[in-house]
Length: 309
Ligand code: FO1
Image 1 (cartoon, rainbow, N blue to C red):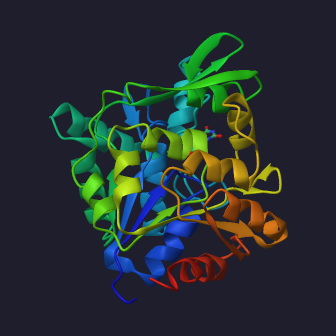
Image 2 (cartoon, helix red, strand yellow):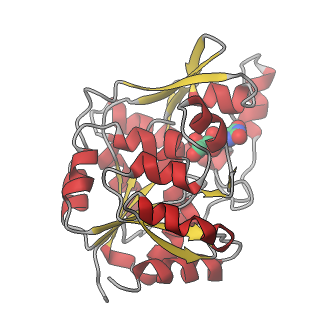
């Protein structure tokens, strides 16, 4: 359906390719609800990695091979900071840095993350709505070897090497959804859960009160694209986090995690044998090539998802 209202739930690097495909086919009727659990205060600046990845992706300035930051960026600030003896394990490129400075200045003047993200999209002439799931400072924390740390510290500073026992969505239980979040789910024609880490990218979105309920109540079809092929995540630490949360690392495990609201699950062709088990848990399987290696693949998958809306 032309002009169908599509709402995507997204993290960063795993989601941006599909979000870009959806944007190409449905520019002005796309809303992206983005995870904020990865957000981190760094050198006094508020960094929102998933929001920035989606915004840079839609603006065409994302460093695509890395999946985060601005393409062709330089790292002079980082080098200078290191020479001053500051810890620089979280790389901030010079152009990317401007976003964090700009955002932090606005936060200090009282603007919300929603308002700042809207302004950022306007600066880049992005027609889609990109909205943080909440304006509150929710933080995904990893409990590893009985030590608790920010997700970025676990993944970037310590390179994901600790044994994870639990994931916590700090401050999520009392957070309010940001304006437009529940309405974007309730009034959509189609809701798409991007192929993102279910625990660290989609989990913090679902942990905000009201979101799961809105997903199970919406009259829109809710479909997810599997971030797992066989027993392997397409990227990132999804396997580690799913095991820690006692969830089977498979498309079926993901479907069970989303089961209370999920209508359909898109499986990679090599997982077609899982179709009967998917049907058995009440989730309709759809099968296609979920790998996005090029812009053409992003559009192909996006078109596949919206075909019968
Ligand atoms: N990921 C890394 O592996 N190393 C980094 O130094 C790093 C810096 C960084 C700076 C800004 C930003 O927006 C993202 C950044 N990321 C970095 C990606 C980020 O850690 C995660 O991949 C996302 O939070 C997951 O969606």
